[in-house]
Length: 491
Image 1 (tube, rainbow, N blue to C red):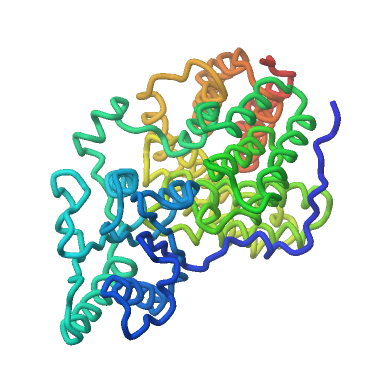
Image 2 (cartoon, rainbow, N blue to C red):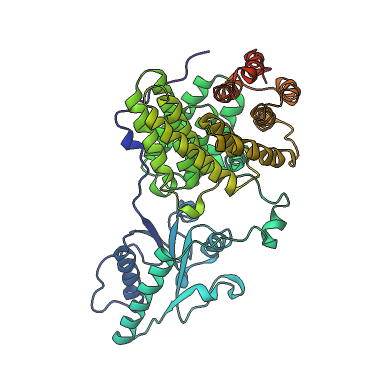
């Protein structure tokens, strides 16, 4: 099989840092020219739009205009995806049509980021039933100077409170609408990427093309090269096509499926800012940078590897805290775990700090969502590695809790999830030094179809556990590792 392409070389890890510039979209009629000081005879609507732009920029945001045309729709079809993805949006509903109202309803209902609504007092809200009427900041289209100045001061107060000071609104997990639309009670955070990949073929022309490449091309190098051609086709044009953001994300996650980590990092650096600041894009970019750091460490390039891990961890911190999930914490834990493994023999002081950070991140992830066993089992393993008496007791207590969380869920029937489910149960048994149960679970795991790298990941975790065991327990674990090194069943 040809080697995967490594044509993306790294010069400076900082070029892969997330753009932390704060952006706020302003959607409405005539917003393109709203930054300019209105003429003396300007309409009241022009004065109001200028006041909005000035206030947004005074609060430290770059104001991105999202023009709405005379037909009530965005003048740029791509703006729909940008508005649905953006973290901060101000919308003047005065000239907005049904399509814009639907998008805003989605933002408010999911919810996505922060959405501030404006309208002239003479206009009706387009959102059905006046559900969000209390959220609308009204302004008078025929106001005298004194009244307009009072409105501007109130506008600044309301925008500051909405854009900066308040927390993003989150729908309760017990909300009946959420439960009715998701009978499973909500999927695990790490499944959001898998679900996007599974539905990629429904994501427009480019989504279908990426899905076809992943399905039809078994050779990783060929699939990656074809996705690179699609990426250039998209980005090298003057503008993205309709549904272009979904297309970029499809290619981005397509690279992930084929472990093209350098291509992920390269595309991340070229993404439009609102896509780059999306939590999924940041998480997968950070995971890719960490994987690349592992390659650099293997090649003896330890300083670049450390720099990549620092950028990866710093990028995760750009995700607002309210958007952190067990997946985010798990990726941060993985970055620190990789750093620990790379420095344990060379810099014990730094390694100890990274080990502490890994444990904290993994335990925070399991605490955030106990259904997600990945951070839980890794917290158990890293506690064993640290090996203080309190750690060993905590590892045993935590292993029981993680096992309860894993076994109460129906086991996956296919795909990688089936392997990770079985591998987690095996690692829990070995962490508890229950060798009878471990051998039963080993037999179950050996029967699961998987890729070689998946076995290698399990072996590495077992080796970490073995470093914490005495001779009596190391021997049976070594026997398990030996069996895991036999070639796995392939798909």
